[in-house]
Amino acid sequence: MTDQKNKYLIPFAIVTTLFFTWGFITVLVDSLIPRLKDVFTLTYFEAGLVQVAFFGAYFLVSLPGGAIVSKVGYRTGIIIGLAVMAIGCFLFLPASSIRVFPLFLLALFVLAAGMTLLQVAANPYVVALGPENTASSRLTLAQAFNALGTAIAPLVAASFILGSEVLPPEAQSVLSAPELVAYQAEEAAAVRIPFLALGLALAAVATAFKFIRLPTVRATETQPEEGYGFALKHRGLMLGALGIFVYVGAEVAIGSYIVSYLLSLDIVTLVNNNEMVAGWIKSLSGKSIEEMNPARIAGTFVTFYWTGAMIGRFIGSLLSRVIPASRLLIIYGLIAAALCLAAGFSTGLIAVWCMLSIGLFNSIMFPTIFSLAINSLPHSRSQGSGVLCAAIVGGAVVPPLFGLAVDNGSFAIAFLLPVACYVYIAFYGSIQKPRTAAA
Image (cartoon, one colour):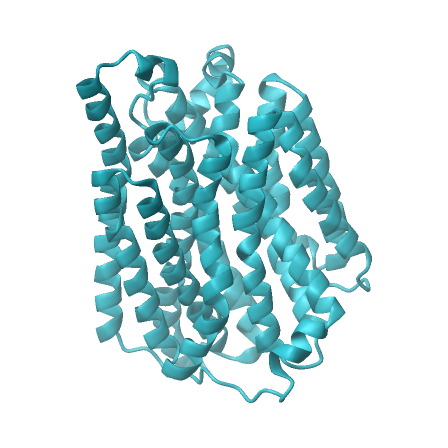
């Protein structure tokens, strides 16, 4: 038994680093929104198209990605996913050089397509690396590293992508033509350098996986003839898919606009008026408040949002052992909805902390909805998994709608959108049979 564990320990550790990678990159993309909004003078709605390009790939690539991995195997699927991600990162070089917004969107789509292939291959591979009775604990541990990536990424983004001074539109309007071109080129470079480094790192990892010996496990399984036809007709699965859709949409909308929202609250003044908070920001960034521009200060706060999600995942996994998962989903959904209302209709640090606390209650939603929906199927569970992964496209739909609400109303009005999402999630939990399920 010990030899069997040792056989899978190193491969598990290697593959788990991939979970960290896609968590890190997903949050790094959120930081692009305020920067691209400035570079291309976009509305909030247009900036939200960044998430359309990114999460639209999940909808378009999930199902064919599953077919590819089934044919070539998990290991080759991982290599292909990493290679496509590297290509996506390298596309940021011409996109930032000629500053064409649609080319940025193409680069993001290619990057996300590679991430989709990587997830389709890596998740079931981790499950297969060992005994079936410990598969859930392995996947939970791997997902914890994904959350670690999401917690670290805001600090990197605050330093490299949001670190330079952002000029408001009125300040840009008084610049001469050469000065404006030079400023926009500098802004684009802030985007280019981090993704160039990521592209080189991903290419190196893909090359390494070509030579790393990993245990061979089956990527295929026998499926009933009904296939996707059966899955798509199953009410429990489709209600769960809608839950995944609204959850990812709400989480990504909030994560995408945190920086813009904090800037709208005059976060610099709020931090300067609170010595304790100023000390926290200084500790996280390694710089004094006076040395940082407003966007970097706001970007540093994002760490609290994603760290809350990471901590909440561990707390939720313990709570779900004593509280039925469906009941926990109701509680978390209603609390998240209440926090959205408080964030939208309050002011000052109360609004800040209410919004950041949403991450803590987002933590269990995806795995809980996913497990409840997939367990409602008597068979065709791999097809059901494909349907649920495709529902991640909610991250491409809700953020632009959130931005449109800000453009035509206010952040307070926009927060009503994620409120509706979380209310549905609570409703989904309420129609499930109470049973304990690991988050």
